[in-house]
Amino acid sequence: MASVPKVIQKLIEAFERLPGIGPKTAQRLTYYLLQAPKEESQALASAATDLKEKTVVCEICFNIAEDVNCWICSDSSRDKTIIAVVEDPLDVLALEKTNFKGLYHVLNGSISPMENIGPEELKIRQILPRIKAGEVKEVILATNPTMEGEATAMYIDRLIAPLGIKVTRIARGLPVGGDLEYADETTLRRSMEGRKEY
Amino acid sequence: MASVPKVIQKLIEAFERLPGIGPKTAQRLTYYLLQAPKEESQALASAATDLKEKTVVCEICFNIAEDVNCWICSDSSRDKTIIAVVEDPLDVLALEKTNFKGLYHVLNGSISPMENIGPEELKIRQILPRIKAGEVKEVILATNPTMEGEATAMYIDRLIAPLGIKVTRIARGLPVGGDLEYADETTLRRSMEGRKEY
Image 1 (tube, rainbow over the protein chains, first blue to last red):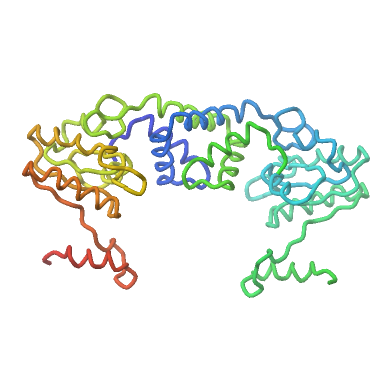
Image 2 (image 1 turned 135 degrees about the horizontal axis):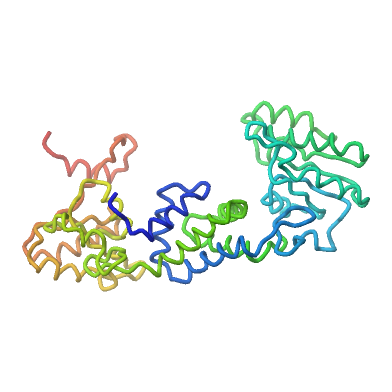
């Protein structure tokens, strides 16, 4: 391809760096913005600038925040006796769509020897003072049902077991709308193990 | 969902406005930028700002340009006797990947009575002075093989017929790697009509 104008090439490249955006999509998005009203690319530009400049990490739960504490930790109506431990801030958004009304603890990843991520790289130990403060009655290990997520959950369970509070793990089983016939073996086994009285 | 920080919400919304980006993807892209180095969101922001501020429309062919003329019109090695008429600047990029070495004429859309787009809304008449200037020997109608693209091609063909130059239409047929069995009727009919001696 000949030399596409540099300003265009730069935006295509910026889009391409985003996860799940290939060269074709990056091109399409750029050319869309070229013909869209100027306000649209400006909105994107200023939002992208503000994103990093106006956000911090919550001092309590390590979720994304605009202030020292995130909007959940600073909400007095939340149930402070229950903490859901998640891997990423996006998991917080996902759980917020359920009727969970407790607090969170965002690890910022999961233990992964393959990627050289040990417990010390994550916000794991930081949950101890929160539990020791006394109000917490249950910790829900809501890390992903992947190898790394399970290892992380197991590690945290052992770490906080001596504190004597209730530690639970989110259920793993067939997704709603799923089909036994097409479920993988591990999921199906988990689903059987996790059965409840009807 | 509770109140996600406004700065995050704004970027999610900016992404959502882009074509083919749904709410989930917009969220994922935003949270990706949150954890990525600051340079990445800055690169996106400045590229999006520059995009509209540093580009204009080429005075000759109506392609995107950084100067009064685009990088193709100002390239003296291009074949000025042949013009490919396309709907959008993205089509220019697509044809640049073929071995086409002529010039372009970008209509900025296609005739679509459904969307109230008539010939006057497009850069159609603007091709006349280019042809009348005398150098052009062939006009390739490279609008999309859609209803609108065909109508546009037909309109342009009639418009420039009196000028007596060669007017061609890109071939419509089975895509390379395609399968007769799965081809739609219209494509197959076009493919038969467009057959060439072997």
